[in-house]
Image (cartoon, rainbow, N blue to C red; front, side, top):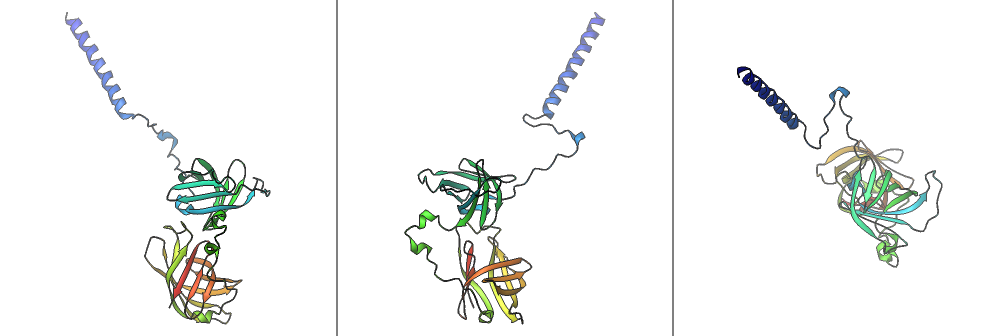
Length: 272
């Protein structure tokens, strides 16, 4: 009897130990989580998206199309894309009633998901966006209005001023404060550099001038002044500073008002 009692106690101890190990093991490994094999080194970091959906806000209209070998293609079904606050619309200019609307997002590294359609972003800046799908390469430009929206509405398209081909920088002497801006819908975001003021102070023998530019980011009101050089060449105003080289069309430049900017970006209205 004594031997049977000892054998029974030993078996109970062994079974208890095994049960405890199973419980511990189940607590360590969580459901849905793959354990990391540390013997293989640190896992590779996730790939970051090259673009944000905020950068693509606005209206985009296709103006050129090629195949993947860069051979130009003729087309009549102009692709139209509009993105606003993580929502998007896709349609073509022929089937105006075939409009798809839905969520819009950018998936790393460069995939645009919009209203159920998927495109690879080959390029995207303030003016041009190049999209690749299974059929072609779509070259898009940012527009204030789609062509069909302006047909018969010349008052929308008519410019208030004519772009100047030549200006005299001496007419811009002094400090100009931007009092108003006009921008393409969706163009300005937290990464957009905006101009607060431009000063034209000294003139050089080559016709250029030196001065100061004060800028800030779209949603950040912290001013950043910087010395700059200012010139006008090829029908464009160039302001060059540590923040980079910026080129603008000039619509007005006299002693009373200075209007300069980008046709498909931000137009600045400045006064002394």
